[in-house]
Length: 411
Image 1 (cartoon, rainbow, N blue to C red):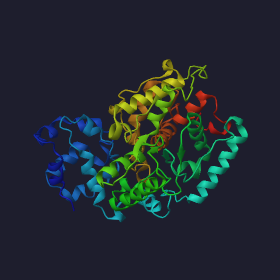
Image 2 (cartoon, one colour):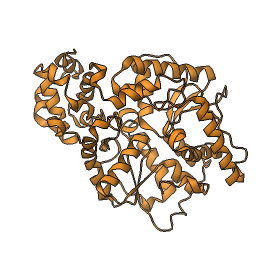
Image 3 (spheres, helix red, strand yellow):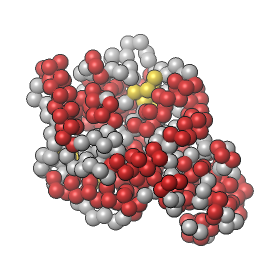
């Protein structure tokens, strides 16, 4: 069992003291999980300093903290409280971890694509071909569009979340159209195509590393210059954090699709227009914790806003408060969605985000992250919200005039 006190002291920035940390309470005010199971970030740190290792090693709150790092973001001393919570997850026996997270991690180890849903690469390739033919039949402009696998020398190695080919195959088409119109040189890989890696949230470092190393090998074997993660935030963080933690050598760059959207629009390669929005529909945007606060920071949040304003009209964009790196976690990340035993707590966590979205009065909440999308859609239904959720790729294709009839599920 880890000594949480020793870990907390090691994580304390030089020249700082825990005395102020235990007094100010900013971390607890910043955390939507405060109060669940009688726990909050400040109490977690206090218990660590008191040597209450046994209690911290078994508290279910470790699965309600989404590791979003907002507590660290507002902390005057930048104490890494989520890292303490991660230790609590990591050190637990498998049978004490939420079965949904463990199952997703284990499933990803059973197939070369590393799909947490167990989707076989050959089946995914077949689904891709079917959707591709449907798009070509509907749009003659995409007659020569390709969605290749294992094309050596492609500039971009593209991930795809398993949810699309397994449950929503039509959601892949808007992404391909964007890549095609932008003239992107890209490929999927039959090895490592699945974007997700829930082993990081299970605290299973061996499995996290195994999956990441095999994905890195797949990218290197194809000779791709950029590993381009889709709109999903947790997959980006799992790769970036893993490359740093395990010191895995690699020659590619890891970049976010959101920033490439912005670049292609600025370069005129995606000639989007907000003229479609004749009814003045309003939009707000969720800043994914994994992509913004935990990895790329406010620059990617600015790219996100540039894209949104370009496709819906600047006058139709409404900010959440707070936003960017200070935005609240929605409660979908960190494995919370997979921890099905804690659905009630997840929705209670999400109430702050629900209220935040409702306060904007927006008709739509754009959610460039799969876990955010699922959670924000769920809390809208649970709490009776009138807003809808949408991916960026849907709205970009709408603004390009190329969105298919069967690609409008979330509109």
